Amino acid sequence: MPDSPSDVDPLHQLKNQLSIIVSFAAILLEDLDQGDKHREDVAAIAKAAQDAFALVPRLSARTSEP
Amino acid sequence: VKTRVAESPTVLVVDDEAPLREIARRILEREGYTVLEASNGMDAIAELEKAPAIDLLIADLQMPELPGEEMARRCRAAFPDLKVLYVSGVIDRLLNERPVLWQDEAFLEKPFTAAGLREAVALLLYGRLSKP
Image (tube, rainbow over all chains, first blue to last red; front, side, top):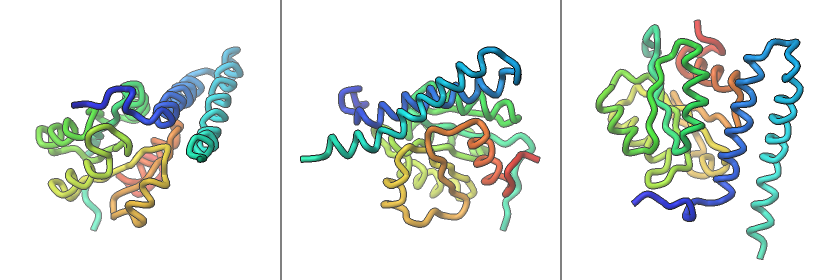
C-alpha cells in the first residue's frame, strides 16, 4: 500500500514543496530576458523560498527537542 | 574504463513528486536528453527492464515504499553501467548509509537550479560540466 500523505514526514513534504518553487522560479528566470520587468519579482520568489528552505533544519531541530 | 555514452543520452527521473519530475524533464530536454519518468522505485525498475538503454538514473532518496538508495542498488546490480545521480534535501541520510559513493554516482542537493542539474548530469555522463 502506498503511504498516505499523513504518513509522510511533513518536513520532507515542506522541503519538496519549497524545492518545487525554487526550481520553477530558476527555470523562469533563465527564460526571462535580462530587461524583463518580471525578473525582480521572480528572483524575490526564489529567494524567499530558498530562505524558507534554509529554515527547515532549524524547524526540524525544534520539533525533535524533548 | 570510460563507458560510451549515446549521442542523445536517456535519463530516467524517479521522484514521487510529479512537479519535481517535470522540472528535471524541462531542464534536461532543453539540453537534448531523452527523459523518462517513474513515480516510485518499483516502476523505475520496470522501466529499466523495458528500456535497458537508459544511461542515467536520477533518484530521489526519500520515496515511499522503496527508498532511492535501495532502488539504485537494485538497478545497478542488474545494470552495472548505469550512472546514478541522487537528489535530496537530506544529504546526511545518504552520507550515513553510504559514506563513500560508488564510481559513476553523485549527489545533488535540493533545491537545485537548472544549471546545477545540467552540470551534475554532464559530469556523470561526460566527465565535464557541460554537454559536448
